[in-house]
Length: 142
Image (cartoon, rainbow, N blue to C red; front, side):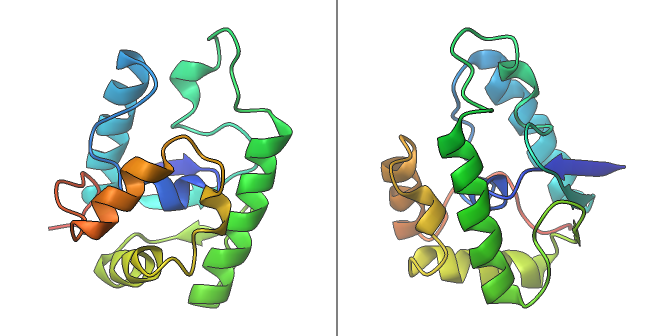
C-alpha cells in the first residue's frame, strides 16, 4: 500500500506525536504514522490527502484554503532543494531512515520550515524538534 500525502504533510509527519484537530483526525494520523513506520511508500498528491480525510466533512474545513495550498508549494520546494528529488504531485518517496534523518536535521535547523510560517501547530513542532524529536510516531521501518 501507499500513503498519499500532500507536500506540507511531509513536514508535519516529522513531528507528529499524537495531537491533532479532532479525535477522528488524530486516530487516523496515528494509523498513518504506523503505516509509514512499517515502511509504506509515500505518493505526493495535490490537495487533500490521507491525513485530511477525517476533516473533509468538518465545518470550516481548511484543506482547500489558499494558505494551505501555498504551504504545499513552499514545502515541496524546500524538500526538493534539500533532497534533490521531486516532492510535488506524483512523486514517490520512501520514508526510510536516511530520508527521516535528513528531513529532521533540516527541520531542526529551520532550513525547510518556510511552509510552517503562520501555522497554528508551529510552536508545538518547534518544541518537538528542540527535544530531539522525542515521542514522534513516524520512525524508520524496523
